[in-house]
Image 1 (cartoon, rainbow, N blue to C red):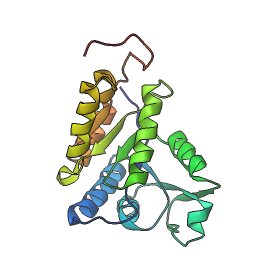
Image 2: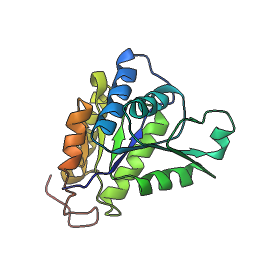
Image 3: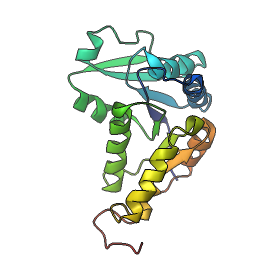
Image 4: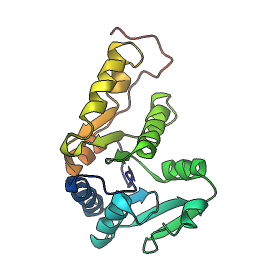
Length: 196
């Protein structure tokens, strides 16, 4: 079972095409704060990033942002957070967010969102941490990704055990409940190949 004190949210710096995305970001921020968890995120005030942070703050939660200096200079920084750390690079940002977080939740977003969640999932697959990672499947946004992960598994590039590390949830509370119950797999990437 995972012990959660903080949850990192990866998400788009734009609101996306469907109003359901921003509604889900707000619901996620509220759910995290309601459970007494801290929100860790990328530190910006725009798009789904701003929505999740504002909702957590409005619900009385603590919000920690980590933003690279280059983006802070473009006036994207959210100035109303519990704490904002400005770091030198994207690499330092991701490492610091991972250090501060007990789980990783991906809302809809673009290639940066996918890159972030896939990196921390890979670290878990390699046994570098035992923290849960998952996708909030808002309005079916991640259905094609789930199908592709199954395809990767069918083609023997991903073990079933490691595919199942990626938790999919339809609501923030369902995903956070799954995070609390998460147990990392006993098999890491380099152990004997499982039967597919």
